[in-house]
Image (cartoon, rainbow, N blue to C red; front, side, top):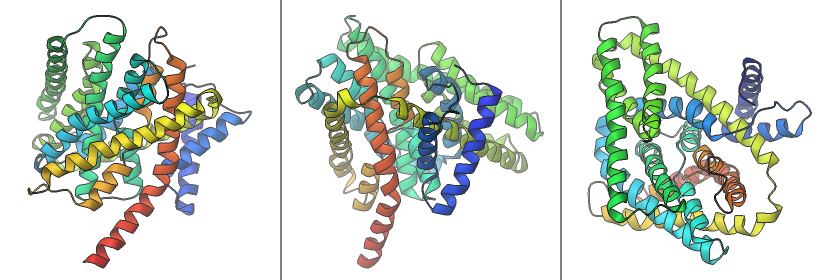
Length: 395
């Protein structure tokens, strides 16, 4: 079933109540939402609503990606861009490879199933990561690194996932073809995002009405995503480009007063999208049957953590003697704060029916996400506090 006004009202009411309770209990709001979703799914009043790839890609990701990118400041991003790009490309490849190898040899999955799972679970999810860091009120360089990396590596994983699906379908794609596809998707997505942002900036420069400005940014967020997806490019990368341009060049066209109104609107839009998506994740988690994939799920959780460690600690050594050096404290946060969430689930749910082990891949992906949200999500804040205390003692 699809979303309706009644369902949205019910879920937003639940989200508002959960936000109040979570703040009083001092627990992460997003984890409270997942618990609430599980309770809703098990109650006789459960709304007839299902988490799907189409719902995540067309309704939730555009506002979440745009809002996060809109808040990023180019001078700060530019300084750490080499670090972010290394993690978002080589890091994702290492993580995916480690997971795929482990699932093939330890869980006895076929190479195709293991590779598909490794790629879709490799990227840290911008939805989960950004929500967690906002809730924990984390600021500074570490927040920039974690949030920006999650935004960029999402695009990497989506492109790699599309290529793996082509290979799984039996179509022969050589290294030249893969390189060409990567080039086209990356350049094409950036061009789509830049074109949409350029049009909005031209129109915004002729207006001084904050309501019109907000409408333009909403059209830009969803329009860039849908335009790129229409041409089989990366909607996330396109929306990321649009958000970065409007957030950093947009101040030339948007007055300070109007900009504040735009930022407040997108802050609420991100809150609403986060609320709905985590409630739906909780509802879906409650309805998954993990009995027949318990061993593969346990293996996958360990492999995903090992792959993340392989992506962070060795690659951080590249910058050990430069001005972009990443402290051990920040490396630990990057490792443990690399949550998996809606993106992995959307890619898994969107797998074609003919893919072998499709149901097992989906269920194991949900198990990894559940561990990520409950275990990592609940312990990130204590980890930050412990690392801060350790840093203070050393200082």
